[in-house]
Structure formats: structure tokens, C-alpha cells
Amino acid sequence: MESKNKIQRLGELAALFLKLGIIGFGGPAAHIAMMEDEVVGRRKWLTREHFLDLVGASNVIPGPVSTKMSIFVGYIHAGWPGLIIAGTCFIIPAVLITAGFAWAYVKFGSLPQVSSLLYGIKPAVLAVIFTAVWRLGKTAVKGWRLLIIGLAVASASIFGMNEVIALLIGGGIGMFWLRISDLGRSLSNKKGLITLAGITTSVIPKTAKATGISLAAIVGSGTVAAIDVSLLKLGLFFLKVGAILFGGGYVLVAFLEGGLVHDYGWMTQQQLLDAIAIGQFTPGPVLSTATFIGYLISGVDGAVVATVAIFLPSFLFVVVLNPVIPRLRRSRWTSAFLDAVNVSAVGLMAAVIVKLSEATLISWATWLIALVAIVVGLRWKVNATWLVLGGAITGWLLSVLAV
Image (cartoon, rainbow, N blue to C red; front, side, top):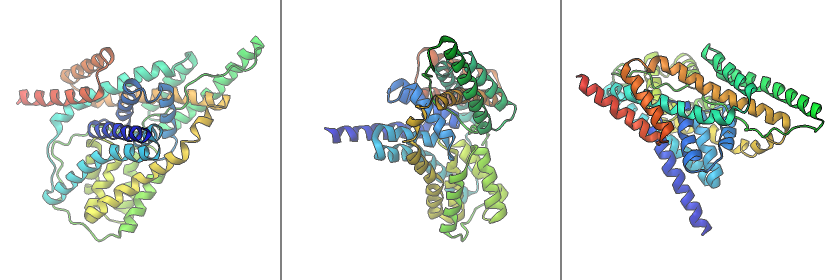
């Protein structure tokens, strides 16, 4: 019976994260929102507080936040096999799609049009993020102090402060503000320290993986041939990137440009830009860009090596960190810090909405798609999958009617 239950859990994880990997457009903020909807709202695998703890932990270690979240959920739901199944299933769809684009890029030197689908997907994804911010915000904002911290972090992010720095500052200030206030109340009431029954940690996306990039017709520099690069050297390069990458997709660009174009000369600037564009367009984690690059440099073997190397550190980090998370809640000071980080994370998600809105809500049609999706998501709690697919179909129909 126990063995059957374990197999059932693994099947549930595989089905869920394959689905999220296929429809996970919009970057880390959207991925986190979809996961929250599925594992907290629908399946009740985690409480919202525990979910926020995992989001926070995912943001203080290197690697793609949404990938680490899938690994965390898999580990908690089904142990070591679940860790592997959930993380792999979330990554695989993006890797396969990216590999297909890489093959077409090498063979034909161009990529297909996708702008009509993106036209409707983007506002729908924006709505998915909004509904998650609304739900998580109701849990994270437990008082006026936390509300102020969340708004301050959101404002700092909107005006250009690095997300990780904003998060840590929000957590540090909040820790002292909440604990000093709490100590003051406890002393005045002579009842000792009041235990903070808070959420714990939460941080959200680093740089949003914006689907706002237009791929109306990305054209490469012609047929690309694989070059002679050691697979070991290629693997070590991407292993290093996966192990030290903070800050999301745009920081990834800086790492790749410095190493692949300037240091090693394995790619041209144009090829790198095309690779980044594909990584941003495809669903799932933006680090699937490594698959495209690996294929261009060393064919199928290069794609496999680059993909495994860049994602491997995320699995290892989760294994090491997972036992530590419950201990962070036992200290009153750490608990206060995590409460503040929680609300700071929600603030970062809200900032993502503001940033993406400028490039997404560009017409009455996109406004309508976003507003309808928000109402449907909040009022009837429709699954994020249907909201994204509905947006894609609506965008396609509008493009057809416009012709």
C-alpha cells in the first residue's frame, strides 16, 4: 500500500510539473503564481505559509527560483524520487522546445512567427501574477508595519534597485522593527516575549522572464555549424554559471556575454542575442537558453551537457537547504526576519506587475484580456492553465480578425 501511494505521488508530481513546464510563460513571477494556485489552492499539499517559506529560501541561493521551487515541492511531497521527478518534469518541456528551435536555427537560419500568441498570453500571465499577489498578500501582510515594508520594497524595485538587495534590506529592517516593537509591547504588558506566529520567508522572482520580447521573425546569421569545443570545458562553464547565478535572466545575459563571446569566442553577439530571445519566449525557466547555446556550439552532446550542468546546482542546493528551513522558524529574530522577507517578496511580485504592464498593456484588447482574466481568476478561481491558454487563443483570434 505504501509503495502504491508513493508511485501515485510521483505520478501526481510528473503530471503537474509537466503541465506547468508547458504553459509556464511569463518568467519566475508567473511560475510561482501558477505553483501556488496548484499546490496550495487546489491540491492542499502545502500551507500558504510553508509555500512562502520555500519561495524565500529559493531566492537566497543561486539558480532559477521557479526551478528550485519545483524541486522543493517534489522533495516535500515524495522525497528524493519526487525531487528528481518534479524538477526534471518542470525543466524538460522548455528544454525540448528550445532544442527544437536550436535545430531549426542551425538548419534554416530562422525561427517561426509567434507574436500573435504572445499578444494574448502576456496580459493573461499578468493577470495570473496579480491574482497570486492578491492571495499571498492577504497572508503576508499581517500588520501595518509589514504593509509599509512591502510597499517600500516594491517601490525600490520599480525605481531600479536590485531585487536581492531590496529583499535583504526589507528583511533586515523588518526584523529589527518587528522585534523591537514586539519587545516593547511585551515589556509594557509584563507578559514576556510575544511569539511571532508568522509566515517565514519569501522572495520572488529575480528578474522577470518577460515574454514581452517580440519574435515576429528572429533571423539568425545563416546556417550555424557546431564548433570544436571540449564538452568538459563547456560543462564546467555552465556548471559555474548555475552555481553562482543571482539576479535572474538579465544577469544571465551578462555571464554568457562575458564568457561565450568575449572570453572564449564560442559565439557571435548576434547568436547570443538570438539564444537569449528563445530562452525568454519559451515556457519554463530562462536557463533553458543553455540548451540552445550548447546545441549551437557542440550539437546534441553540447545541448545535453550544457543543460545538465546549468541546472545541477539547483538540485544540490535544495538538498542541502531543505533540512535547515524549519530551524529558521524557531528563533524569534529569524522568524521576524522571515516575516519581513515574506512581505518583501510579495512587494517584488507587485513590482513585476508594474514593470511588465508598460510593455504588455498596449491596447484596449490587452487591457480587456488582463481584466477579464483577473476577474475570472479571483471570482471563479479558474486554473491558471486555462487563463494562459484562453489568452493565447484570444490573441490569435484577434490577429486573424485584424488581417
